[in-house]
Image 1 (cartoon, rainbow, N blue to C red):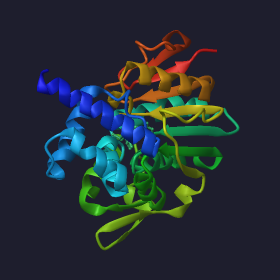
Image 2 (spheres, rainbow, N blue to C red):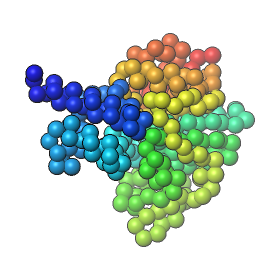
Image 3 (spheres, helix red, strand yellow):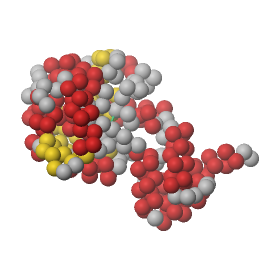
Image 4 (cartoon, rainbow, N blue to C red):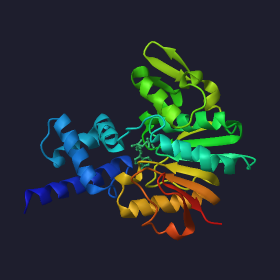
Length: 274
Ligand SMILES: C[S@@+](CC[C@H](N)C(=O)[O-])C[C@H]1O[C@@H](n2cnc3c(N)ncnc32)[C@H](O)[C@@H]1O
C-alpha cells in the first residue's frame, strides 16, 4: 500500500482515539489542513509517523492540548477586515436601533479581538447597553484570554489604524489602559459579554439571536460540518436576523441558502428571510 494511504489510516485512528478519550471529533475538519496540522505537531514532538502520537495523546493531556491548539488556528486580530466592521455600522446598526434589545453570538471567537472590536462600535452607536453578547469557542485557553481582555501592545499601532478604517469615531486609546507591554480594555465594555465553551461539532443552538457572527471558522470544516454549523446558526437566528461570515466563506452552497438574502456580498453578510 502507498505509505501516504497508510499515514491517512493512522490519522483516522488517531482522530478516533481523540474522540473516545477527549470527546472532540475532528473527522469532519477539512482534511488537507488537518493533515498539515498533524504533521506540524509531529515535527514539534520529534516524531515521524501519526501512529506515534496515539499513545502520547491518550496518556498525556498536555499533548492533546498541543493538538487542540494546532487545530484551533487562533489567528485573529482587532477589526479584522475593517470594511466588514464599517458595513455592520452602516447597514446593520440602523436596523438594530429600532429594536428594544439585541442578542449577538460570536461563534469561534478565539481570543476575543473580534468581540471587543464590535463592542466598541456598538458603544459608539449607543447600542451596547441594550446588547447581550455571547462569545464562544471550543478552545478553553483562548476563552480565558478573551475573558481577561488584556492584549499585547506589539500590534497596537496597526490596531489603531484598523479601528479608524472600520469607522471608529474616537481614538482606540479611549477604551483601554496601558500597562508595561499590555493594554486592558475598560470593564464597561465587558458588562454585557458572556464568554462560554461551545463546540460547533456537538453542542446545540444558542437561542433567539439577532446576529450570528462566525468568521474564519468554517474554512476549516468539510462540507458536511459546514452544513451542520449553518443549520445550527439558522436555528439560533430570529427571522430577519443577520449571519456574518469570513471573507472566504459563503452560505451559497449550503442547504439553508434559500432562506437567506445576501445583505452585503463583499462583506459576507446574509439576512434571514421573513
Ligand atoms: C481563525 S480563528 C477565527 C477567530 C475570529 N472569528 C476571527 O475571524 O478573527 C478560528 C477559531 O475557531 C475555533 N474553532 C474551530 N473549531 C471549532 C469548533 N468545532 N467549535 C467552536 N470553535 C471552533 C478555533 O478554536 C479558533 O479560535
